[in-house]
Amino acid sequence: MTRLPDPFPGSFDEQSLCDLLASLRDLQAPLATQIANRQSLANVLHERRQQSASRPRPWWRRSVSVPIPLAAAILLLAVVFALQQRASPQLARDAAPSPAHQPQAPLPRGDDSREAMLATLQPSANIPSMEAGIYLSGIGSLNSKVVYLDKGFLP
Amino acid sequence: MVMTLSESFVSRLQRGEPTAYEELLARFESPLYRFFYCDHRDHHMAQEQSAETFAQLAQSIANMAGCDGQLAAFVFSIARRVQLRSWRTKKQSVLPLESAADTMQACPCPVQQAAGREQLSLVLAAIGALEQPQRNVLLLRFVEGLSLAEVATALDIPLGTVKSHIHRGREYLRQRFFSQECQP
Image (tube, rainbow over all chains, first blue to last red; front, side, top):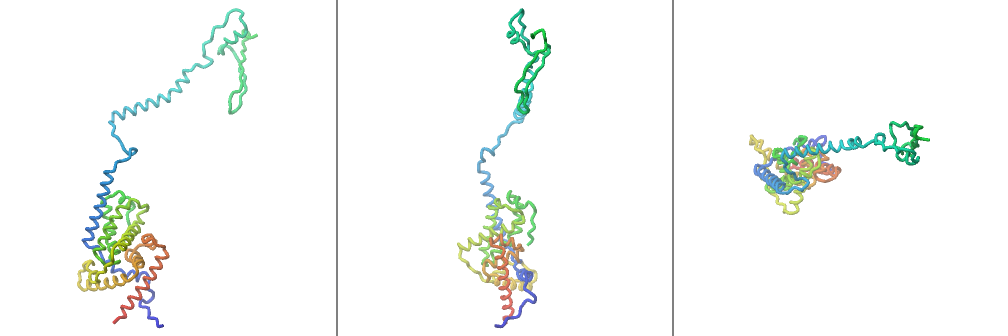
């Protein structure tokens, strides 16, 4: 079998193939094709626009228009409410009487029993006292005991 | 063909900007026409297929998940689907080669025009004799300038198959042009 000599000296590489097929690049779309392409695209885009315009939006994507004074009033109310909520725990804490400032019941006169006297006895800042207790870290007070140091009241 | 596209070109197409579609037409209408015309050499069919490809492209561009660099592969993958669909539904009708050069750009010099037509007719005949996969690969790679990976993506074939088609197509064209040059 005889082999023919290579028509492309060296090698018929990609560049040679590119040059060979280069004349195909002169093949341009004729005017009729360009018009048909534009018409086809315009039809599709018009259909798409119509579809998107006619399709109702789901309720979570709908919006309503609100007058600015109404919106401002709602916003103001919301801010005031939030400030009130923030301030109310502070007020409640301030308004609550502390055990030290609670009004004292009148002491029984005469020689009443020791239990009755102790029952009516409230801790007061005027009476020197000492508090002893057991605390556990992380839990708090387990037991506490108040000892009054006034010898006139205690035996 | 230069395939450099701006950064947000695909997103502009997805938003439906008319100027982006004008740019798309300017870039791809001749390559698509060539792609179809070289397949069957029927001007009317190529025109229909080009228009159908652009319509499909406008419908499916919203689903394209990729950057602008992948647009060429995306466009030709749609063209490939249109080609396959019309190949299944329509009967192939081959026009005479003389009509092929009618669509060529006007050349100022008649001698150059005649030479160009002859060269174009020869190349069209040669590439038309190739099998469709090889023809598509050679057109996309050497006429439209797509990379090997882009050709593989556009035609939905492995990279190795692309290389194999290029090798076989190159061998075939070498043999064919050599035998034509040897003819008296």
